Amino acid sequence: MRVALHTRVRADRIDAYEAAHRAVPSELTDAIRAAGVTEWTIWRSGRDLFHVVECADYAHLLDHLEKLPVNIEWQARMAELLDVVHDYSAEGAAAGLPTVWQL
Image (cartoon, rainbow, N blue to C red; front, side):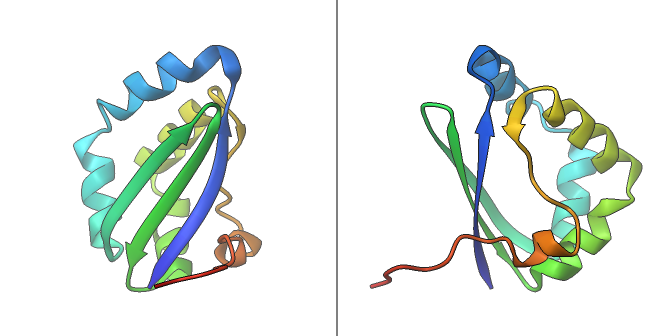
């Protein structure tokens, strides 16, 4: 399945956000892959971040990552950089951007 998400980086933290993503811990990327993700891409337009996640089951992905220490640490770090964060709650599993058009 493909899920599109929107988050927003704080205006004064753009450089730190991009630096963090140049050094994502391999333990986290391994856990993301183990949860069924085949691709996760993030684009930035100003402060707006758009994610596209290709995975077997997005709800399973969130459930798998939610309580992992490496993800908890990463999300705490991201919370310092973002105004709109990735939602790991049950509601977050349905929080993907709706498809408007597809070719």
